[in-house]
Length: 160
Image 1 (tube, rainbow, N blue to C red):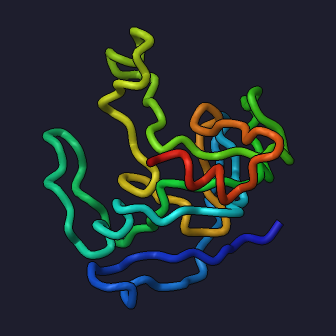
Image 2: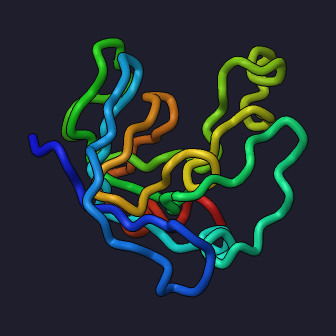
């Protein structure tokens, strides 16, 4: 497998012209991660706000909005590699990334209320999003795409 990929990254805020198409290293995966070859990503209002710099103040205890950055909260694709502990997915599976992956460690997650997680790192917010050929995600941060649903539809329907 190649060592680099193409990605669209943001190094400053502004109009569409600030987006840069660059060569970057393919993300490493850990033992609980999958490497996803991105086939589709959506552009949503958050991407537009982040790019333009029209961002809210981060919540207390949350990190500042990073630059340089890679947008793309909504991404779908095919798993091309898995970490040694991955049991939920295998190479070749079609998946979509969760736009709000739970941290699994905060008090709400431990109580089984992952949908209320307050310590998540959103793709395209705090961690590099899907504006690239590849992204690495925890195995529990992707869902299978049902048969008959294309990548574009899967990516566009995760966050409405």
